[in-house]
Length: 129
Image (tube, rainbow, N blue to C red; front, side):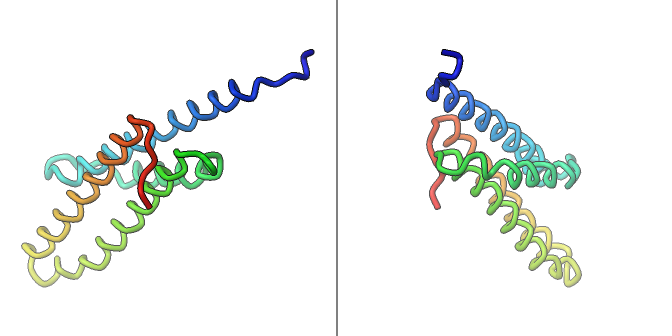
């Protein structure tokens, strides 16, 4: 009877593994987001790249689960933040204040999205599209 596989246990282990990966990714994103909002703390963009790579690699494992929405949520958040930072970068050349305001707002939006995702993940809820 060693050929019998407990599917429920396997699914539960996979769900827990995905949740652990999700928490790791959210934590890395949170460190970067807090660092972007607080002027004195500047964590490396490398943390964000590591988190993005984790999400891209593990997203396929989450396909068909409520956690898949969290992987997509984090990936979209990073991509949109990068686009917004790039689009508003010329404001720094015009005057410092408009660039500072734009990047401050983007950083607060980024922090909000990460915290919102963490709260939903803690409640085992998917993220909206």
